[in-house]
Length: 248
Length: 95
Image (cartoon, rainbow over all chains, first blue to last red):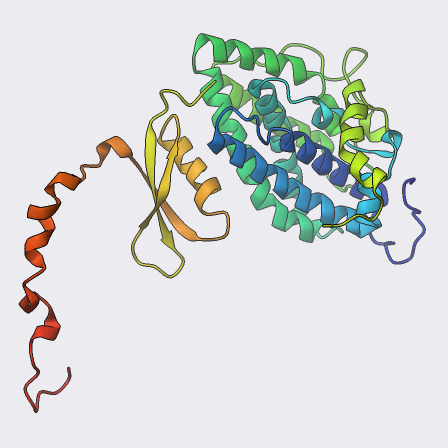
């Protein structure tokens, strides 16, 4: 299925591109976090990651329902129709990679939703509810970053490597999205300040690599995705595609 | 990473209507802050509580099963320790 028609009168108030961008970020990250089920480092953390994944799935469902049929949009769109940033589709890697991805994304999502919730745009209601969930995701990521960064030599090394590896996917978070009425430059400086503060307290260096430009990522919002995304999508969609309309 | 060496914590949750924290279960966590967060995820997912305590299990001194008889049995044959043992005299009001 393709991106839904933007001229539908029922959804006229909701900017479709922006809704899909927010929904796909949440949906894809939710699936990635769900992959930890059964293989998280400890049981307690598995439940924590699953809780975060379910919060994100709930957000994605509301957003997708605003612009079309949620199942159709989640399970029948092709890779090029997904509008998520490339950060959220990156594989889980080791636990440090997952936490670095959580830190980068949940800080962005929290700052963004707080701004959306305080406005009166089409996403204000959803953001007001989601901002509390996302505040917890951010808190979870920050606490783990502090423990891994300022933990053992090995955890420090792994966390440092993870923060470096994902750094180049963070510039894309602040590309303006049509229909999303926020000041992306202000969002970015707030994000940089917060992430630098957490990394500093975790005794980690702020990565020095580029966040935009030739060596960085940045076309997920246009439907261009990295190689691991296709495999993730195949796994996420195969059941629905093999058995259309199946239910419990 | 494994939970080997992570201490055990006992979790107490005060429910929405309850006045006291009641024991909900236990979990492993590297420190108190993480124990609190893990407790939130494990024991208050269905809005069970409004407040959580976590206590290192090692800090709890418990009575031992071997001491059960001297500890608890002598209370069994002392019905006068229950208010229902006493008859209320006629004419007493406000009881």
